Length: 266
Image (cartoon, rainbow, N blue to C red; front, side, top):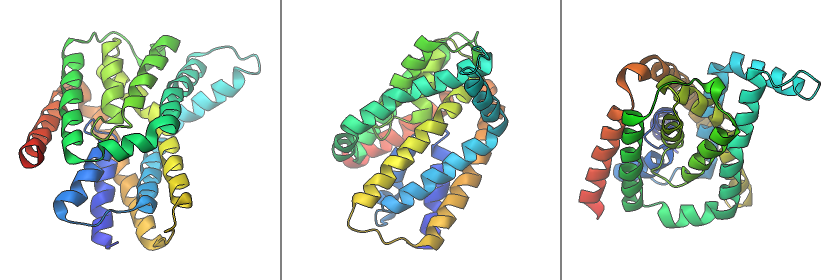
């Protein structure tokens, strides 16, 4: 892969993984429009690792506190707010793991095309706008309970469909359940740690099972680094502005991209 292609695709992954606009959809569309060859499974694994590094680095203090509290909950430490949040993140990850194992291959085969991506961009963009416009804003991420975690986790499972957006659909459900905008984003990003880890692991398994395992380690490293830096900056920016701008600008962007795709391919 050309290093310039790697940089562009890594930036696309770093931005679209955390902005509610669908990273999988954009990784399908960008090479298609630019006439590039498919980037391959190895590069997909690399940029997923990069975005995982980004979210772990940004939330390192919270993740450390949650990990300690979660371990402490087994040793008589009780269910502190950090321990409860850690449990909710783990519970919220179960649905996407189950659906991915059962239907991941079928979803990728049937829905990895521009028209399907456009449909999902528009549909879930509309749901996101409605949830953000009419959702209550009374709760933070530490108020998330078991029921909330399961519902948000089920929403995350829908993001296996390219065009849905993992961050978008989880924030949509969180806003529907009454979380504040920043709290919805923060819980979505915390949920991304096991979620992106599982997605990267799944792609790694596919890579190991494929016949073509040739890896350009220089390009892979470039992809990891660019995706990590871009993702970190994206998280910081979104958390700083989301309470002010809301999710409507991202919904409008999704509608615009969907309209172009329908015009070109429908």
